[in-house]
Length: 381
Image 1 (cartoon, rainbow, N blue to C red):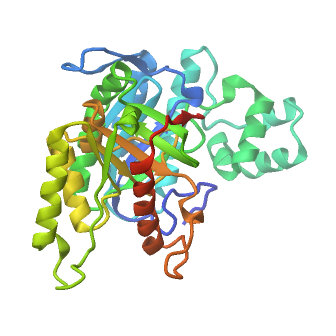
Image 2: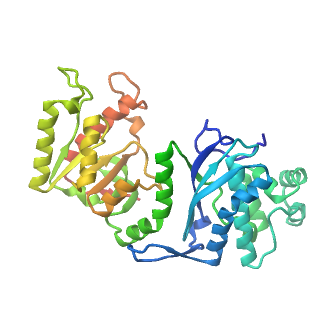
Image 3: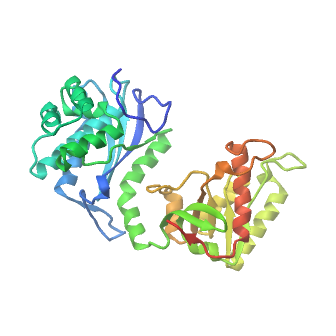
């Protein structure tokens, strides 16, 4: 196998073997170089720039280019957004090269297109020693250049810090089109694969909705709710509703041992929750962990009931919910909260806080806190 400086998003996964992946690459500095987003949610789309067309072509021709290297891959969907790119790629048989190498080659081709459109010379797969010596490169870079006979090989051999130093040395015209790394989601099964492809095709519509409904689709990385710091996505106004009701269920009935959602006690609680919603000004609060909680969370999403959903996954700069929750946010009926410092909360029954057992209990504790919160959330970032 050929090793590179690439660090996979999913440690332990075999990136040389068969698999299907949803790929995301981001244009450096989030510059909208690939096209222009429309504004018609009924007919969503992106008008591609010449560079966007070139990126799309580079993706579509990836299988034939990789075949020359002995790699059998297929591409199933792609979309160029103004400042990023999504694509679904399938590795059909084990490879000598990794997925990281395939993505490096794709990004290098796109960078080459971009530089030629700016009037710069070819920079991919050409000798680099001249650049290193003429710019007074440090000894470590000259030695790297001596050992690797083209830029593509050199770049793969550098760490992230070394790449930044190299690009600063040779100038902006030699810097890449896309950010240094990329995001990959590993496909689990056929249903997940279909969801990946649907997500790619639906990206322009989702982007138009986010732009048209900023208050309902708001992403904030740090929001102070009481004394706790959360990442949030959705309608923050739901925090100010007068009546917030927590949905918390046992997995098993404490007396009969039956699955709790199958008992009369659950049916009675469920009716109380629905009655409260129907009376108005009531929002359901739950992490949706146990089966009973999950059923009520999904009912809220299906029927448009107001919901505050607490999740353990962090909300970061580019995080977005899956389609069902995205649509609920667009309707104004959902706020997603992701607590920072969840694993620093107290251990539960002696079980460390960074285990699922304690996380689940602590998330229900946070749901109870949210139900008593009557102030105004403070957006820190």
